[in-house]
Length: 343
Ligand code: SF4
Ligand code: SF4
Image (cartoon, rainbow, N blue to C red):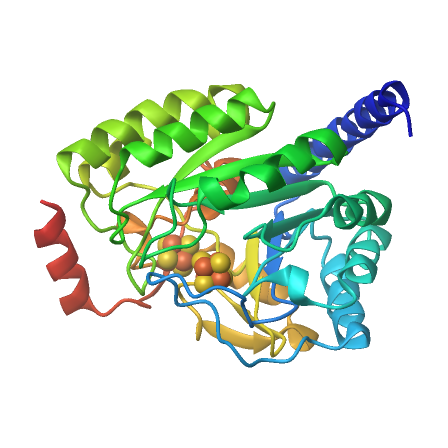
C-alpha cells in the first residue's frame, strides 16, 4: 500500500472511531444500566515477568475461541461500549484477531493492552484488518533491569512500526512507583510517544489491592509534569491526579461491577484487576440487576484507588447515583495503614 493510501485509510478509520466514541458517550450519559467498559482476559500467561505485576503466570493456556466468543456475546448483550483485551499478554493468544472481530461484531469498540514484544509489521496489519480501535503499550524504563524489561531501548523499533502501520489509536503508558528505579525515564518515554504521534499517559504502580503507595518527591514532580502530556485526550478530565500525586484520598464513586467490569480467564466478573474475588459471579449469570446493585455500592478501597480507567468511567455518573450500599474489599486495618503511609 502506498503511503498516501495508508494515510487516507488511517484518517478514515479515525473518523469512524470518533463517531462511534460520540455515540458511546451519548449512550453512557443517557442510560445508566449498561457497562461502558469491560476488560477481559483471553490468556493469563505472559512472556515477561515484571517484578511489580500480580496479573500473570507462565503456564496458562489460552481461553478457547468459542468460549471467548460466547463471553463477548454476553458482554454485547449487556450493552458494553468498549471491550479491552488484557492479560497476561494477549498477543500470545493464537486466535486474537478472531477475538477482536468478535468484539466488533458485538457492536463494541475493541482495545488491546500489550507489552509490545510480539508486534511485527505483519501482526499490526492483522490487527488493522480485525478492526482494532485502541492499543496501549506500557513502557517502564529506558533500559531493561531487574524490575521490568518493558524498556524504550527494546521497544522503540516496535513503536516505529506502529507509527508506520497502525490504523488504530496508540497510547503509550509509562509508570512511576513500584520499584521503578529512575522516574525521569517516564518523561523520556512520554516525549518519544508524542514525537511519534501517539498519546501518552502515566500510571502509578499500585499495591496488591489497587491502592496507592505514596510517591517520593521527584516521582511526584515527574507525575505532574507527565500529566501535561495528557492534555490532548480523554485523560485530561482526570481530576484525581493531584490527590494521587500527594497520596491523598479522593472523593468519588467507584462504579466497578456496573459501568466497568473485569472478566477473568474463568469467565467470572470481578470489580477490577486488583479486586478479584468481588463479586466473582459468572458472566453467564450477570444481569442488569447486578449492574444496578453495584452501581449503588460504595467500595471501601475507593479513596486510595489508582485504577485510572475506572476513575475515568466514573465521570459519566459523577453527579448522580448516590451509593447507599457498602462493601469492603480492603479490610479496615489495611486502609488505616495505607492512610498513615499516605499522610
Ligand atoms: S508485561 Fe504486563 S502482564 Fe506481563 S508481567 Fe509485565 S506487567 Fe505483568
Ligand atoms: S475502588 Fe473500584 S477500581 Fe479501585 S480498587 Fe476498588 S474496586 Fe477496584
